[in-house]
Length: 195
Image (cartoon, rainbow, N blue to C red; front, side, top):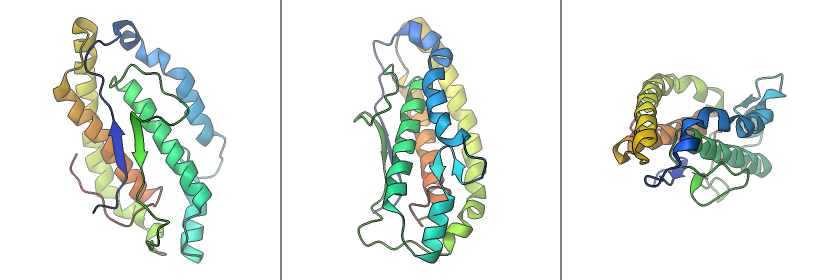
């Protein structure tokens, strides 16, 4: 069984709201400001996109324990990011809720059930993930192209092409696995390069 972060996004393919799709880049601004507020007030590098990193590294290094309150915060922030990404990347017309929902979110591997995380690996995971960043950048360009195609298709037909969805959802899931490994530090299992 994989010990990676699992991302779930429910695609809304039919009966799309063409007007909100047309102005999606503007409509996303309020919730993007909210999500950014979790990371922009920090002057140190202890956050990436709102995820606590430095306290986790310290507690894993010296105590061998992942703090439960940080785990819950990181999971909530990543789930919010998934809801924002699903809306911005046109996968759904549901405006991103600040509360968890059943349609879009993440599942973390169980790290409180006795599974031990490495004490020293968090110091180098960000470096070991460099190949993942490179592949992820390529996937990001691919997802951008698919989203542009989907945007035009929705505006003219009112439907999201399902063949675009697998690449876009796969890219979001890929980056969540990379974040889970290199930054949220919830797994020691190296993520696969596949979508």
